[in-house]
Image (tube, rainbow, N blue to C red; front, top):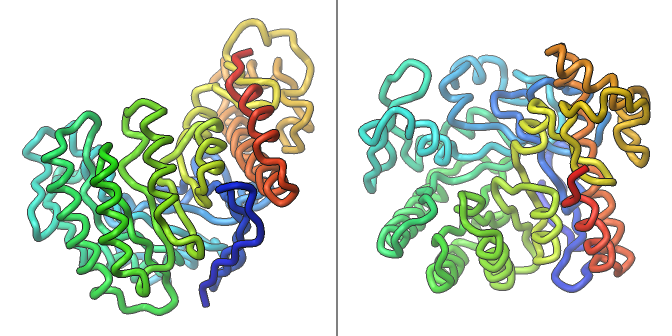
Length: 375
């Protein structure tokens, strides 16, 4: 029902293929974030046309709205949102901590039982336990499901990171026991903060459940730590994980972060960055990063990116895209999002090809010079 095949390697960089009940995924892959069952500003048809192989949904948000009962009555998340390709849902743990910060410290209480929190919509209290989070995701019927974990901030003390790791490991054991559906694949999440010995311990302990896990996620990064810390922790964890299972770096990131992580052996990524930046006018191109709001594009009638094959670049100029954004036309969000997501998918397509051809290092060097340039 689920399988992962390693097709090629170029150093630690991997080219793979994941088979699921809802289709095949070519890796390395970027997963667009459809927080509430939709990628903001796009239809599902547009997502498919620009190359999306899988969508990510958010357990916290979908649990609150429309709620598990509605999704259950609809026949599961795939039917409710009319998406016939794979879906990954996260545990909602990160959102519990991040969204509740604005409500004050009393809004979240973590115990060995689980996380009691006030939601950001109605201010009501809820309890997420490892068992409840698995139960919710089994109602959703998503292909890939994530266990509840405790997220820590940067910076944090090692003592706190140690406690959070112990709790995350115990919660994973409970998640494995709670999982009933065979048509869903569970990932283990490797936490441990920003200390190598804690990350090594996290991998060692998580591997004890290897026969019950389809893959491994690297969590707790891209939370404000220096880039070199993110990259070194990613490299360490990937070097310790089994080669025959997929690796997912959660919540990452910028194009350069994806390239660095692919070189270190990561297979799967998700991040709100390309869609969020599209809605604020920051667009990624093969020549560099463009702020489409800038007056310099007012009379530039050339395509946004001459190398891009997306609908936006094939039909519209920088001048028109700037006009739409400045005029606050809703179409601006759609056209910008189409392009940014297509850029990310093309980057992964190019990475897969470079790994197959044994030239990933050269590809990465050239791509980094482009994607980090400000135009």
